[in-house]
Image 1 (tube, rainbow, N blue to C red):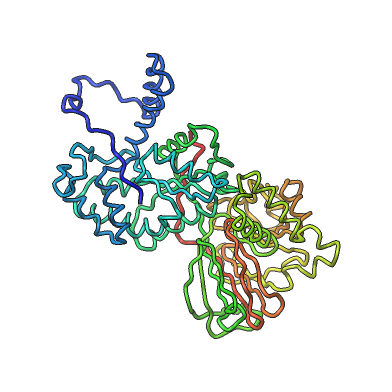
Image 2: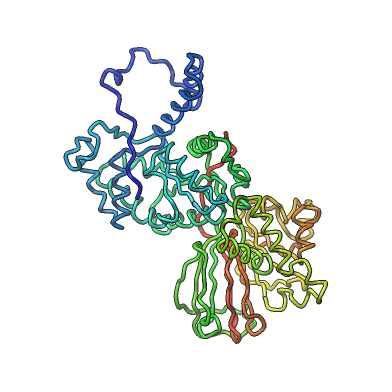
Length: 516
């Protein structure tokens, strides 16, 4: 665990005395700008202005030192009560723990902030960003996701603050109630953190902190959708500072979240292969599958289940197979993934290698269409009845999309005209409308034209809930992905596998990056 960093020193008694006629306070960013300009006008230049902005950020975002020590102690011990010493030492006298600075400023910051960094994202430049963020807001509030899981932060660190608050610690209460979270990584990383924070709703432990984004992934579609951009500029030293200010002052929007449950037959071929799930999914163990009349294939008595939450898209088929191959290659040869551009070039090459483009030259593409193994059922808005939906015979990938952005900022659903929407029974798509847009991709050439937005994808349906049945006996496995995190799902030769998707009853909270 990282060492504890120093807080800004407390003002002297004379500095704390307020003037008799104080001028009206300037807005925080305006005040910072005025101060930085005054530094430059006095000849101190950019270095002094930058140092002031760094201190301003830390003053706004850094926890009192005793609270930082408390949350780290709680996570180390995996026990929220391990940070209880902070309550005894809140006067800052250092009597309980002599390593505390007796002059440490104990008042709660205006905008408490923690950051999670995925060092494997950003062409392996995540560690560089982690160091920069630690310089700006302190080592103790920047977490490496390969060391600290966001679920542990929720279970132990936030619970520690809650226990301190319940014991009368007003600073802990303010930090817990006003906390914001910065996530540096790709869409899958952001979804991982959002999912862990969403557990606070389930446990009735509100409020839930909103999330800001530093885009380090390849596609960064969730980041694009909320104004955080397509990529992060490592060449611009002030980029991290600017992102932190946006995280502190940005407004908050709601985002639909979608719960996925995959039910796998226990007595099928899937037991012969260890299933490597992405971190956004968790195993639920054995459960009973309840058929409400939609199943077409054979059903086992018991199934093994795993579940997760996605925010942008879920897909099954050829696009997920290509993504899976790309991730495998990147893990085996990380030196190839030196940045977003090289990632996209590798991705394009792997797309061709998989036959996404050339299958139709050697055989009928419909022979590999998802229609051969999949039955699709949906529930429409304000309906409790399942409706069977026909899958076009040439479709080789089905995508359920929540946002406008997909595959690095493309909009495959398209901006549909009102007449077409009315004709198909669709409504205009939004990220918080309680609906998923379901579309199909036929093969690589069709997908390419969709990605450059010359045509729209094959519109299939809009749905408030989705059930996908993958019939056993024809394919050995199916490829799936959620928010860019793919996996290979072994299939039973005898029984069907089911994927159920429904809306999570509470919203996810995203900070808007385009406000400033």
